[in-house]
Length: 309
Image: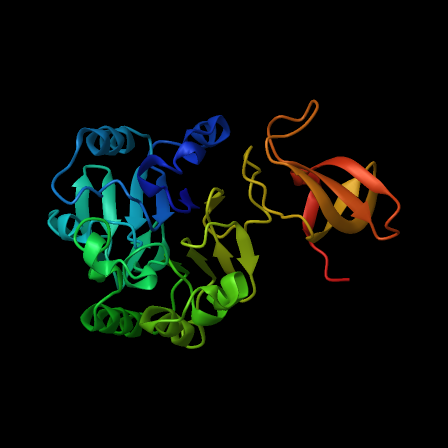
């Protein structure tokens, strides 16, 4: 089985991988793909003790850890790891069971063709916030955006596969998807425009990304991941709930089951870690359309998607 999740940020957002339900599901020989901002190769001088401990942790799991790069990686160090061909594409070998899936590659994993293209523009440091000189080479690197050669290699590898893959794994998303998530707060760039072109020229079943720190399904078979863990091919809405990672926000309109009936309403309260006797998932207070009735403590597993009515 192939699992996917969002940014781990060098341990800041790794708690999801310690979830007991996930650890029970995963089996020897499975794969976990992290959609960028792996963050465990971060110090610009050398592998520090904390990085070593985490990389050894991943190496000792039942699954093999695979990741595309995001914008929060120490690229000079990352590029120094041994490179080899693996399952049809190029990787950097970080540990025996920890691989960096390089940019512009098409891998075949468990019979699925997967296109990878890491990278993204930073919005919290570097040129975006005017402190490039202070952080360059220490916590920001211009290599966060793929080179033209890497972008071209991606196009050529897709052509060799007749512009058809099963899945696309990236960190940021296309310009239109980014706008849907962030509006004008995140600017388009050469990479988001590249993905915009791919979105309309490549045949794929599903596209997964990270970067935007939310768990959301978008139109066009695209899912944005942060703290959810999905089986490949799965959507966020269909994924197993994890405590502390609600997929809905206040104001969202959703459909849900309650006591044998189906309803639609607006979320007015969120309890990320559960409430009352429900401790294994988020629960919600939902106001029905009559605006007079609020149904309390609706389990996330009892919802079945957004309502546009």
